[in-house]
Image (cartoon, rainbow, N blue to C red; front, side, top):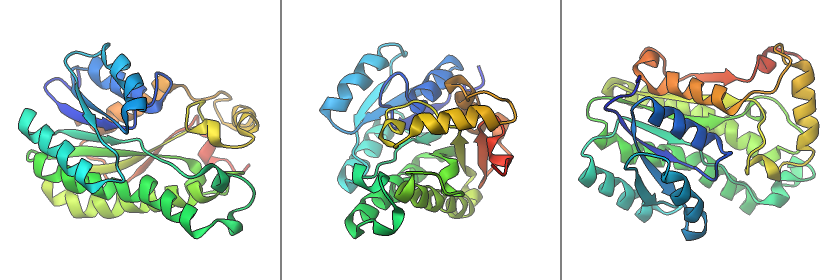
Length: 254
């Protein structure tokens, strides 16, 4: 019960195979009370169905590209809970065409969208959460190795993840004096709704399994345990870091 008595918002649950949902389950199993957000009513159907497995969760409409919805969501959290202990940012998006072909031909609009949804949403959410984290707190964002290395067909999303990890460091510096920790969790490749939009993803999975030191693909539960460490008091001395849960693949030169 590492998180008994703690309350947190998880942004980005898509379905039962999403990393965000695995994190939600791990937090709930360890005593946390959760709020889950959903972008729109269509995606909200999945979230509401999954939420039935949790104990008394809050469900909030929240499109991270809309400042008004961000403001309203955190006002609701303030009214219902008064305090927030942790925040999970599991949101990323780029138009499909920006994940095909080469990066050099990325359009200005596709680049803007990827940065707005995948990167700016983190400081926007952190700023809204700050007044509720009166006793300190922990914020994590999900990243991927494509933010530091060139990954086939990752393109503009790789640039976005690089910006996300940089944002984590700046936010850690800004919020550290308030006792708020900010870290990134970089998971190995997983079959999720987000990865379905990456071309040749099966090749990436095969290569990872063959070359990672542990010679296996990472599991959702392993990533969730990494998040649990960062969100719980166990990670109280860690901030501004990108923690890899990828079977060691990130240390390899191939």
